[in-house]
Length: 520
Image (tube, rainbow, N blue to C red; front, side, top):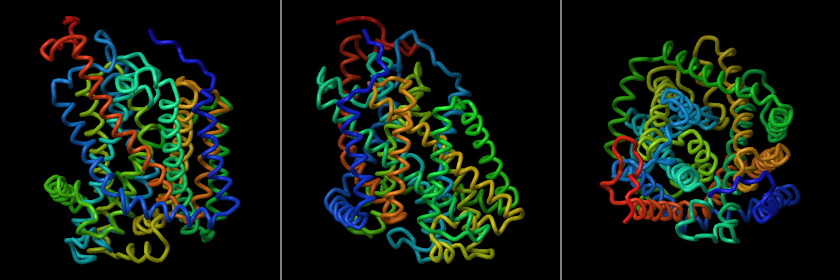
């Protein structure tokens, strides 16, 4: 039977993770140039020696997830055989939609397609041509749709299976029980959870840094405040105070309300651009770019730096795969929590299809509007990014629409609330991982992890801006990539053990989705 996890800390996880996080922050404060130099050298080594491993592993996660969904394993429930889903399908889809949005889509929705338009991936087209626009959309879909959500699906599937079917604590280490047995409670298991916390910390710090940069760019675009590390750090400080207040003052319901309202506002912003923008061009773009995306999915999935631009690959594809891997514990816990009682097939199809559909629509509207402007309108977005950086791209696009000041303020508000709610949720997950998997870690622990994530984001911005954020994501994700691969192997063994105990594949009850209790 499962023991109810206490709210107390797991000292073997908490203190090593705190030491690593605090050591990084103090190092960055005391000697940022030293930290930047060593981090750059480590990054170069990882990309040169192990860059291929991010590419092949991410492709494997997608293939494995699809295989599990459409194999007979797909009928196994993430819970006991008699359990039904806790949330209705409609609510489940809405929550899946909400987790598919965030600072990342706000930051890169315009910036990525325009950047690829100006510098096409791997030299696949001439810059700033129609062919470059098509390649730009294709790679935006590639970086944000099926592959990242396959990473999240594998993390969430493993945690849901071992937490709700095997009654183990909601910890990443619990998913290794078939391989490690009771050693998941010892040093090896604790090391796995420490790596999960560090990956989550730097993945969160990357998102917070991007959010602060984008708000700073918006303020400067509207009010000429200037852009500097100092202003970005002030933004992080103010929003972190709001996050802390939400965590300790009992206004969680207020933040939840703001988050739900944020989703509605994001949808309205999207509809505004779709209605007043080049709607027919967007629809044409969606159809054609999706066709090329699915047609080239295999070749894109396995493209390494052997015959292509290694610098571009590191700055874009490997950075994204590392960022998603670093977010896997956080998003995995979330989607596991809302998916209890569903079958593996329902889970995988839902996690892959629903957020990917959001991605296609978001980038088609945001990126399609921007590319139409470059090809047939006033343009200037490529130059804006080259001159002022990627954070300004969204505001440069909104300036070409009516009510630009209002929509720019709305965009900054969206980023700010995504910042607060995202930091809150990620900090809760880090608190869970350091508190033996309890779903309600102590508020002080949650706040501490949130403060450390904000401090890490501040250090990274000072250390190197966007490059610093990308560097930290890749370095933090590298060791956790090994955890993700091992997690897949452990899940496979666990599913085989499940069949071994309960019966053959044919003994899966088609009516309940559970395994019939026919022992060998």
